[in-house]
Image (cartoon, rainbow, N blue to C red; front, side, top):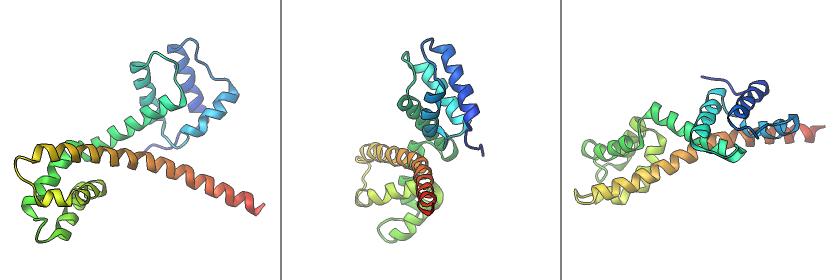
Length: 180
């Protein structure tokens, strides 16, 4: 696993951006203002986000635009590790045939969690009623809704982990300041 980015690496990456955007440059004060937004990410995540920004944007990078691409990179990495959202939802629906949701819902949700993770289990819980009455005609429509829900939960999961790091750091700083 990669470690979190340090400030020297961050400065070097920001200097590389000025090669692609001629009027982009961060002075020392701006760098110290930008760095806290990216300190919980790895240099690989930031590097891939920078590449996506260069590929897709004509305007100078901002904290928001780079953060958007970092989230996109994190979701892509999660999908590489766990499978695409479409395959996960197909697995949730396919699991109905092996561990029926009507007669033993606890076993069904446990099987979904073990095979596809907690995010998939949350989606299955949300669509419990729809899954119980699932017909062949309704499968494509339900599948699309479940994919959207899964992607939404996945993005919250990925961004929530980074926000949790920030919240814990802020909380520990407040405790230290209150002791002084």
